[in-house]
Image (cartoon, rainbow, N blue to C red; front, side, top):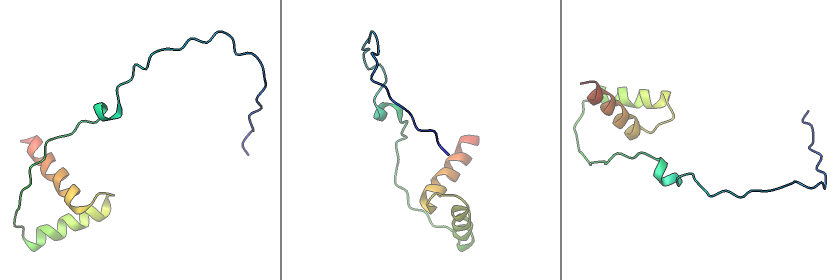
Length: 75
């Protein structure tokens, strides 16, 4: 069971307001530039990517991008 917080009406004391020093969320996200590509794969390859996508929470295309990116980064 959770304990309830009991608030009191006591003075807080001296308050110092500071500037917002954190970057905006859009500045924190690292995005790669994407290029659209069309490829032909064997049926076996497509089935492999589908089965791998089912194991993760990613869509098939996102899983493909991550797999290809991983292979490219290792070479």
